[in-house]
Image 1 (spheres, rainbow, N blue to C red):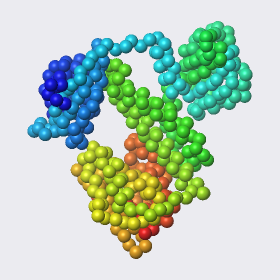
Image 2: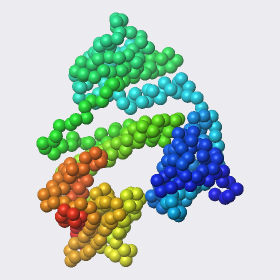
Image 3: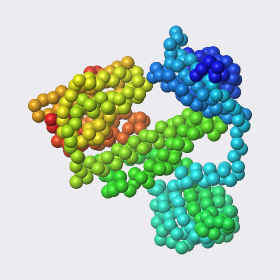
Image 4: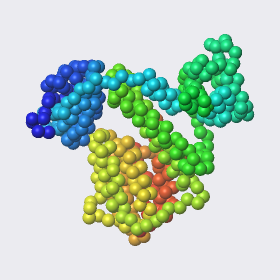
Length: 452
């Protein structure tokens, strides 16, 4: 950014606190709830500063913030730490401030309906007289009412629930039922009804969409699995596409809330939104793992072997995960450009295995350590080894690390415990194997072997 285009400059320290700032950046910092000096209070600017500081990269991007009165849009150039205080320098340009557009009643209603669609646990399609056409439910405590509704197709949906706050006889006009509280047989939870009228110009002329939204989520406590989870047939083909879209929408909406793009928000709620987005990403990863599990467990599963270079695949895997490693201050060491280890395997599946192994190594390794990928070639096989400097494993842990849903005590990190199980299945399907060598306190070495 040229000097003539710079509106303001700022400086942060090693803890991402804004310690110096010109106007209007200083004013925006305080209007967003921060202090000067104090932690950067502009969410998108804080995120960019953290990335620049931790990755050592220069970052240039547009940021958007709401200062309580106007939507501020500005271009920022952020230079990584070069000063003794370990922080970044900020240059701000192209500053504009515009009053926020007031949300119309129609837009607010549409947003509420979209939210209810995302969280509804029972949905139904009704005709113009509010009689049942189709029903879909996905909560255990709704099985009873869903079964009754399907058997009672053509009846009024309101016959299958009770309304403790309504003394009127049914049927009622849909506007009186929209937003009503109800109780559902078989469920101990309280529910709110959303009725979405379809058709124009008369709302409801083409029927209704019925949504039941619970006041509280169903208990997240799941029984321990005594046997490996049996994945229903055609999971990937049928369930995965259905789940991906709503989960992706939840993630996108949570990120919008987290970044305060829709307006000012208390820090704790922004943190909640970040947790929702993170959980959504973990759920998408779990869906991918379950889809892969279905594939490798299929009787007709096979790979498409080709001539590949294990050293090249290893270099690609480290390149893909380099940012994640640097964020944890972990050094990835890949085979040199001159190294080669010809093997027979399916490139996509080998890369999948190495991404899982390197990702696990990063997750288990302490900051400041190294993850090393090395290759070697024997007479009939080629090997790639992923070695970390983490806590290592006992012989008992090494014996069960490849089991389904085994996570070696890692709880709450969103992992499915399927990655290593699937990776070994893939390795063996390609005529190779995946083994581990480890001891407590000595890190772990995962060795992928493929035909040479």
